[in-house]
Length: 234
Image (cartoon, rainbow, N blue to C red; front, side):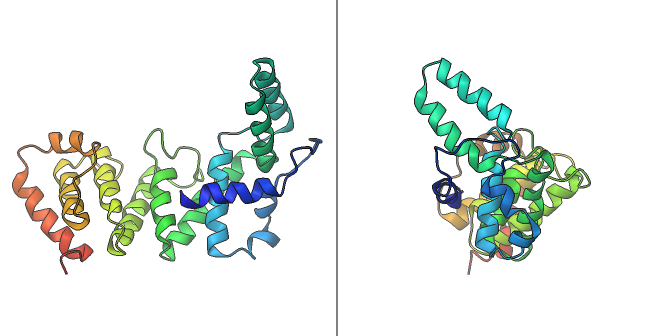
């Protein structure tokens, strides 16, 4: 995400590396989730907040876990890692498991407003394909519903000129997240991507295309329709 590095740089700049970690400490991301602060954030700031939450998910968010991780790094002689871990993790302190579920809500609201980066990130970090989005959505939202949201947002991004969304749609239909695996439809998105972007599909397309052998007529028909729908033949 293009905002993520800049976001963390700004957040970390506001946290002195010499601050001692006291019980009950809350980092700046936790503070931004409070309603009185969150409601004043711009769309770009909310997108940055979602990026920060995604990064924090891999870092200690409690004082005890942070201290244990720093001690382990120090004992191994990796002082740079210990210092970097302390600086980065202080940004994330105080976050609870339910706070990470705010990612889905933030990205969904922005995606519905047509924010293309939020539409792409919803698929990358919320949609339920194993290894990508687990744990970043509320329990009340089914995987099938998350996938349907992703399909809708990715098509919106593709119509807005973000052609990589077509590749993401290919993976979405190939994975079977929406229903059963749809090899011909997935390959049609790849064909549309190549026409709309003017570039060859990336390597991850190979397994999809191999699964769609023998479906050339369906692929041609579907891809022509997709190209018209996206508007890249105009």
